[in-house]
Amino acid sequence: MPTPTDPLFRPFSLKSLALKNRIVMAPMTRCMAPEGVPGPANAAYYRRRAEGDVGLILTEGTVVDRPAARNHHGIPLFHGAAALAGWKGVADAVHGAGGLIAPQLWHTGSTRAGKWEPEAPVESPSGIIGPDQPRGVAMSEEDIADTIAAFGRAAADAKAAGFDSLELHAAHGYLIDQFFWAGSNLRDDAWGGATLQLRARFALEVVRAVRAAVGPDFPVIMRVSQWKQQDYEVKLAATPDEMTAWLAPLVEAGVDILHCSQRRFWVAEFPELDGEAGLNFAGWAKKLTGAATISVGSVGLNTEFFGAFRGQASGAVPFDNLLERMARDEFDMVAVGRVLLSDPDWVVKVREGRLDELHGFNPEVMSGLI
Ligand SMILES: Cc1cc2nc3c(=O)[nH]c(=O)nc-3n(C[C@H](O)[C@H](O)[C@H](O)COP(=O)(O)O)c2cc1C
Image 1 (cartoon, rainbow, N blue to C red):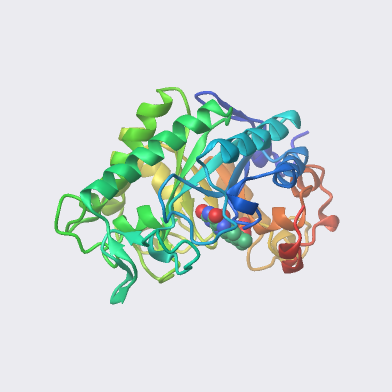
Image 2: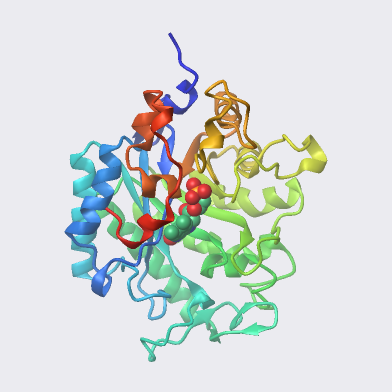
């Protein structure tokens, strides 16, 4: 007999990816890679989530080969023999537990304030972090070409290390997103411009380099967000037409899956068009581009979330809301972040209906994760 959680536990396939369920571990920075090299403790942490039956694990952001790509010294590198060997160990550990894993490839742009590598200038499209906020230098043509090439090399390395996919971090106000956003991209050359579509050229070239590096069959995910850490209220695309002009060329260039980052998955993207209960960001991105999408944002964060599912008075965000959206294929997968930090067995408990054992997110786990 089907159970109410079935929409979450259907398999999902795309190219060489075959997920056993629709639950993705959201990428979460941990700053726990000494010298930028992931070791056995990092492998054990990810393996634990694979043992907990997560469908696809996205690693914490890990940086491409540019001098100032990191904004904290505990962030893992995705270049150099030692770090890549460490990452291969992580992928092997996850595969050993029957899981799938993709690295999140990252450049933090001008979010970096640290001065621990003074020879590496902070770089971004226009030498600002947001409107009227100078930070670092504007990238030259050479810097841009080298950064695009670095993403390409990282993609080839991800495939060679045995990862199942890769995710490009183009969200949350970091480098790629700094090119998208008019508030941080003031360039008047071919890397900037008055429209989001023009400012998406950097991302487009990154996707092309990545696709060329991994070939046609390797699944490529791109994480995008309307919001920025610099300003939660920013909307890059104010209309579906703008969203199409932004995302469709990226899909055309080789993105297979759009990971549409929202802080709350149940918030409608264009409520003026389809109401407060309308499609969310991942729903619109799927509808407009035809690409597969991942949604995210506050899944399972408090016990109230499961109220309606338990037959109790429904909380503000009933689990049913997620299941209904998944059942009608509004989006294809859902990423779960903080809850999987607190509880590596969250997926198993949901599947087995052990809802009384779910306890949301405990911030104390941040200090010593395993
Ligand atoms: C500790 C922590 C670190 C994060 N690091 C990243 C990151 O490296 N890359 C990224 O795209 N998002 C990052 N995020 C955002 C999460 O991937 C996710 O989108 C967010 O936590 C919302 O999902 P949740 O409500 O299920 O936690 C981070 C979030 C947390 C809590």
